[in-house]
Amino acid sequence: MPAPDRKRTRIQAENEDRIVSKSLDVFSKYGYRGSTVDQIAAAAGMSKANVLYYFKSKNDIYLAVLEGTLEIWLNPLTELDAEGDALLEIQRYIQVKLKLSRTSPAASRLFANEILQGAPMIGPYLKTELKELVDSKVAILTKWMKQGEIKTFEPVHLLFLIWSTTQHYADFAIQISALDSSPKSKLYKDAENFLDSVLIEGLKGPKYSGVVGSDEY
Amino acid sequence: MPAPDRKRTRIQAENEDRIVSKSLDVFSKYGYRGSTVDQIAAAAGMSKANVLYYFKSKNDIYLAVLEGTLEIWLNPLTELDAEGDALLEIQRYIQVKLKLSRTSPAASRLFANEILQGAPMIGPYLKTELKELVDSKVAILTKWMKQGEIKTFEPVHLLFLIWSTTQHYADFAIQISALDSSPKSKLYKDAENFLDSVLIEGLKGPKYSGVVGSDEY
DNA sequence: TCGTATTTTGACCATATGGTCAACATTTTG
DNA sequence: CAAAATGTTGACCATATGGTCAAAATACGA
Image (cartoon, rainbow over the protein chains, first blue to last red):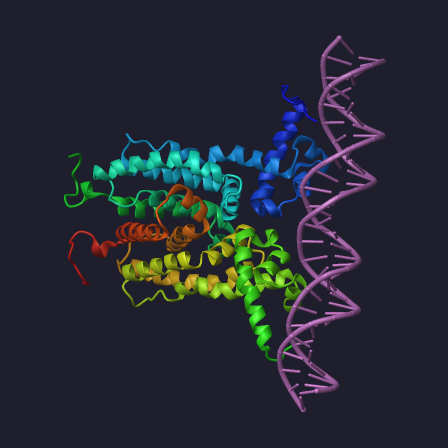
């Protein structure tokens, strides 16, 4: 077995990383149950026995992949800044999520699969860490509402909308490509234009209504 | 085997319907690969051998479930009426899709699973029938844009937005319930209020800008 | 270069799963 | 009510799959 605690050897580091990296592709494509250790081994270019030499079980690989991706995937929300301009902050968040959807569709699909199956692994995480993060951001949205920067509604739903619309381009890519033949670059540009213009306009609060040029107070 | 072509007996009708109905729950929860014929048999309250007496294979059951659900799920789009008021039509479509998401979450998850796995079964359908339907509705949206009823953007993205946001409440229900403890009724009411107000405002075309009360010409 | 630690894998095992079949049970029909 | 048709299932089979293990190959420090 790999050393119990000692620092990783060069080969360990390489192989463990390769297994995690390649198995993301496999898990995101077929889900946990639909993925086999043989597939992962083939993707990583080694024998099944060797894969299980580095990770005790298929489940352990899955956990490593989830952990390695979770932070990257959910990080952008952290940066929603209470001090920034509401509409600009939201716009930026949408842009970052869209870019992530384009550059890391596998990560998106991995989570989509996990949640669809009832979040057997990350369920606890959702109720604790993610909930805390979301609560703190909901507070920011509420503040912006009170300041008239954005209109009033139940704040979480804006997060749900941003998540669902942006991740849709990764999770439902097959359907999208069946319905729209534009190249990926145009598709994402159009998506951004659409979401930006509709949301920015649709979210504007009382501060912006009536007198057009009004600013502060 | 069941009669080759002859009309279904009472028992055939009952059992086939029960198998399809119950296996929707199973397939939507675990995906195709994650569902077993034993699970389906248990859910339908009969032996595995009997299930396979009515359906030649697991795949055949899956096809029957997909077929039986597809129409219901995609039907509302058909009703988007070119002659109706743009914003009202869109609003109604959102409402219907949201209601469907609430009342038939299993159907939504079934398709989400199918698409996530690369649409191995309904891929061809997406490229033909669904594409045709979408193209025709995109034409309607384009018309509304030219008439100034809604602002100008790449029309498919509005469909993507409506699909993703409404289905999100079914597909990601576990995550939503981890983040928001409101009862389902409030959740969906809030979702509808939010989507309505943001989208209706965000979609308004030139016809509505400037002079507030202007109506036709 | 030698000896030890690490790495790699083919062969193997136990279990799960899709599917078949012959025997038995029930329903339908004349 | 008896024969034919239909329905039901336990036992069984072949394959797939997660995981183990001992032996062989390789890397590496002294």
